[in-house]
Image 1 (cartoon, rainbow, N blue to C red):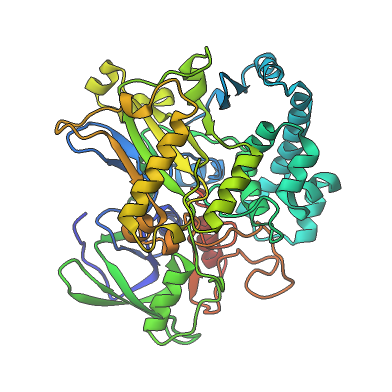
Image 2 (cartoon, rainbow, N blue to C red):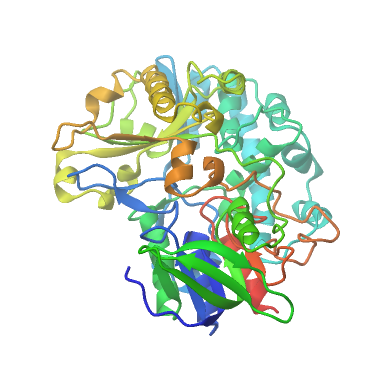
Length: 530
């Protein structure tokens, strides 16, 4: 995107063109505000992008984030987004020995039979009951995410189910799952929702795993994770188009170097450098940061200002290994099951409760887990538009792998070597549940290279600018107010900072995390309500 002419002052300057920054820009511009959005990279979208990852191969993969659950339909409707999300028929499949556990949302009979074949027949009723309880919690809590913050007591009253509230919000997730299910495998399948991008013991007293679990089960009031047609680039592309159509000015290759927060009587000021090294400055009635809290604090400090009050004391640390693959065909399973059923939903690999805990202990001790837990899914089974016609005709399929318990600390000293070791261990883990090595079915690029790419937290820090490679920018927070006053008091939007003219609209805001646009919208609502 070429650099357009910019004015000397805007009502709002948005720092960072990830999906939340684009959301804020679109809402404010539609309301008639003058908006300038500055993005460091050559294209907007942040981690919500699609890319041709493999040279000479016509496949546009969701390189980083890959599914959508938390984006309210309200955002799509209010901004008129041209975006299609497809529901997955199968929830999950977990291979175990020569069998496995299939959760088929289209057939309760098939799901029950799978539980019974696993020897966990009694857990089927518990699964149904737990899912129903969590579903009711989701129905009641999710509508609050597009409103000003409610208090913790108000959230509990909305849920109106003390037992479920305690199980999800007050006692460690591991304790809840052990009390609910007998099967180690079933416990693990449920537990993974608490460990995505979150490095924690399932019994961690901080309940960070519970917060992660909550966000993964409330999306849309159902907890469903949907496939964006066209990939994640279609999501950020729709938001970009909405912002531009409303009149926002978008500049890429713009590296923001300092943010002066201004005062009650004076505008904020933003300094940035373009791709040619030229420096620029612009005044703003308000500055909205879509970047991580730590990044915002760094540019505030560069202007001699105090921190935003949004960063956590501990440095952010991501904990995942993302592997993108293109296959000639889906790999064979050890069970006589249609691979379409197995790979359309979430395919759990060595993610029983005990395996998750063992992997956490090894990683916490500074070692890549021997048998890394991971989960994969096949986007192209639900939406093959991301593949070129030749790939579709050849039967090619994509695989997205998300590895757990891979904290950034494992990759700091030797990024390249540690990535190779982590990838090798992860592929061994995947192969342990397949009937053939996954590497045997990888598509080859024209130069003969296998179509496989691995990205560690350190890689994400370098390529997308996520501090510590943390996909949520910092540890997740409860989606309600935990204080009676201050930045996140009831009635605020969870995006305010200690500087009146500076707001945080990224994943590090309260109610941030995931591809949701919730904090991006909240920042716009906060400004429009002033």
